[in-house]
Length: 316
Ligand code: TXA
Ligand code: MG
Image (cartoon, rainbow, N blue to C red):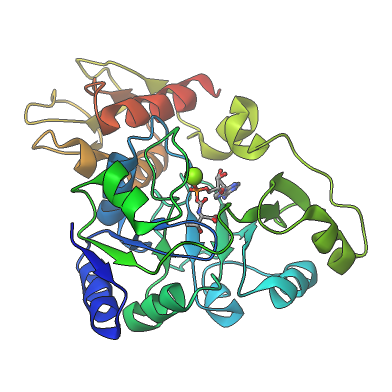
């Protein structure tokens, strides 16, 4: 995990690393991000593994500008107004996901919305230009720790994980972006951050009510309405019953499923995380009476996988 001064050459190497699925830590004006190609589910799974997140929270996707953002999300007039006023800058907009944009399900945690922002930092912008990819990046800290505002913080916290840490000096803002949802009927503040609420209200010409922090994500009710398959899930299944589909894990799945997807025949939890949401969708569409889910080991990314499966099982 070399810490490299963010020269043009290092940025070029970082872009290549992203393109081949590696993760790269890079500076933004708010905090350092732990970046992965947002189109590559395996790379995104490695970000979750590095952060040791017990849950798959959706990640912010970084893009150079509004034009790039419109490839991945649907903007209405309000969303465009906010993007024009604050981008590039520390405002993340939660928007309806544009179907067919290619964003990995794991980035949005299977939601039909996506958080996007155009960072205002020359290194982040140069990296986006060189990579020509949308970059999914949470703050480059372990889950539950403080966000890093210097390359040395990232090195201390995440050590060997990123292929590279681009050092762009201390972050000017030092607190995370403000997150506003424009995916519903009216804008809602989801996370306080570097842009004051009043500044956003001035642009909107209206009050910006605040949801409970991460309400859309944290509140199980809302979460489940979005993520849950319609087909019931039967967890910790060791055999397949008549009419069931199978979500398998490991080398020896039980036989007899009308339709099965193996998250990882090799028993690799990162591979399983990368495939999870797409697998649920696929099995859900197959018309089975239920989806039998094999036990998933509850360590590493297995904890987040099991959290998601339990929510999906309870949702109905
Ligand atoms: O300043 C920042 O925003 C930094 C830099 C690296 O850009 N990133 C950051 O990411 O703080 P992270 O993953 O630590 O926080 C992302 C926030 C979380 O609160 C998450 O719940 C919210 O954005 N979020 C992401 N996608 C969402 C969605 N589809 N709906 C609602 N909230 C979403
Ligand atoms: Mg964070």
